[in-house]
Length: 268
Image (cartoon, rainbow, N blue to C red; front, side, top):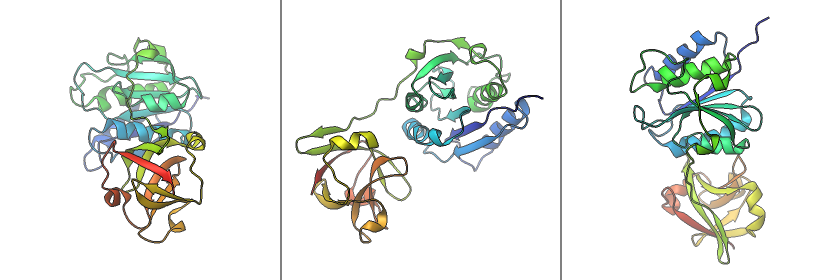
């Protein structure tokens, strides 16, 4: 019996008002009939590579190992590379533009061990549009790889260490407290910080204790309802990343924070 295709997860900033996502689905279904396509998100802020990279890093551990297609591509049609890579752990394949979008997710799975430039892949559609590489390059390459095509035959081999990295601010434990940065926001106004679970032991913060955030009183809590409505809290989000929220409010508005702002968090 033929082996069913590997599942494909799909993330983009295409939105759902136009046909772009549906067309990519159709391309993949034609090449790999029966493929399971899991839509992670398509409502990312337009051209926000970092938001896409962070979402991909958070979400992929919950996806079945397979092919992971990501398209946030403000430089489509330029000389930026289109790539596919294999991770060291779990044999996952990531496909997308080489603009940093894939880098954080690859690092989460031990880094890339094989990579190819798929700009001239034999699996691409012809003619290739200058503005819709999601349809003409990334989707068909992802589908072919899901159907069993070999990664190293999908394009021109490149050094996996040359993949474009994503430069992020770095949290620091300082004598006066933890200096963290706002690296993302959700629709509720919660603030994602650049501190993951394994780094928390070095901070001196203790669950259930009061803290201050840029001088504002807060509480290091488990969930939103651990504080009264309108109060500020520090917590680990669903991905075990440190975050800030206001119970039934917006931490982003309360603290007047923009992307990359530094926040000083101290034991109360």
